[in-house]
Image 1 (cartoon, rainbow, N blue to C red):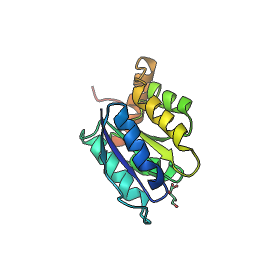
Image 2 (tube, rainbow, N blue to C red):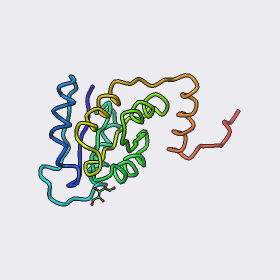
Image 3 (tube, rainbow, N blue to C red):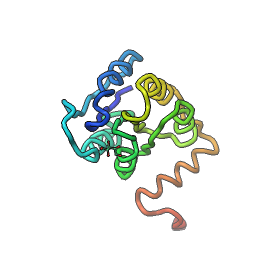
Image 4 (cartoon, rainbow, N blue to C red):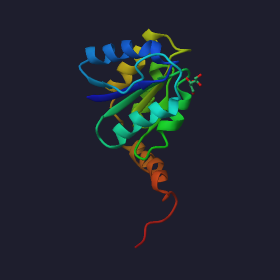
Length: 154
Ligand code: RB5
């Protein structure tokens, strides 16, 4: 898979290890920055990764900030992106199976590296369940263009 990866200063400490780990699983990883742990604004990096996923340049995205929360909130505002902050491998699995998440947002301050690696592996290896979940995800995505709840014209 082609992955887009970025962090802010609070997630920078895990970024290189997460990149190496994803590559060891056979993925191609584009590191969209930052290049050092100087203070930055997480939305700038969430936007870079989310746009690559939305534009189809990347199949999935990985973001790391202090909590994963600000990254997820920002990335999820980009149309076509389903970004989610994840703290456990089980939630990573469910976010793929039920929600077809395409950007995983990790906590560099509150979740250790080994757990985040397991989250990444689970996220990348779990397929979307489809079936009953597909209609729900379609409803979710209708929020992107403001058509939720508006009946289709005949
Ligand atoms: C940076 O201090 C912190 O706010 C950021 O990394 C992230 O946790 C935001 O959600």
